Image (tube, rainbow, N blue to C red):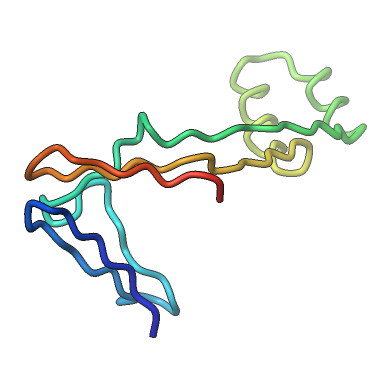
Length: 106
């Protein structure tokens, strides 16, 4: 079994091990009040690719009400738009002393 240890010089520590489905380890924004991953320091680049199907365009063109347009967009987004994301960095802060580490270049 694989695990990740996060240790701070102030004595805060946590061990992340798979406790749920498969090899996944639950990691919430605040881990046991000892560490936090500040979402403002998680940087994600987005690349959107659009490949519109003719039926999708025709349905949008024919729609006459805002609610109908919204429903067509909600139902057709996955088939017509591809969004590739890349995680650039994660910052983990110690809640005890304020020390932090930034993980980069995945």
